[in-house]
Image 1 (cartoon, rainbow, N blue to C red):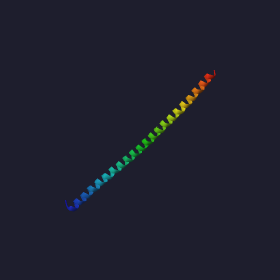
Image 2: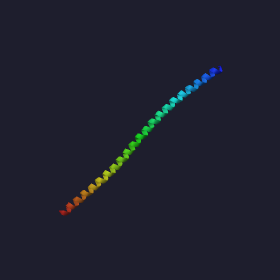
Image 3: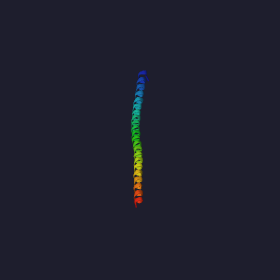
Image 4: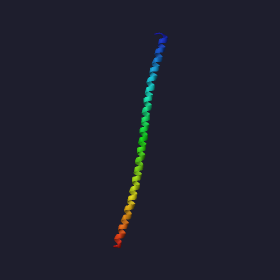
Length: 81
């Protein structure tokens, strides 16, 4: 092979490797984007679960307060009779 042919072959090989790496990097970026979106969705779900848990605790506390007031009313009614 002459030196020109060798240079062309080397440049072609570098171009093919570069094209391949560009495709691989593009795939990695797409996967990273999907993982980031998935992580964001998981964060939203966890926040919703935390909010739901807090709201459940608030409702449970409110329910207990209402139940205590009903008990007091029942006691007062029993004392009157």
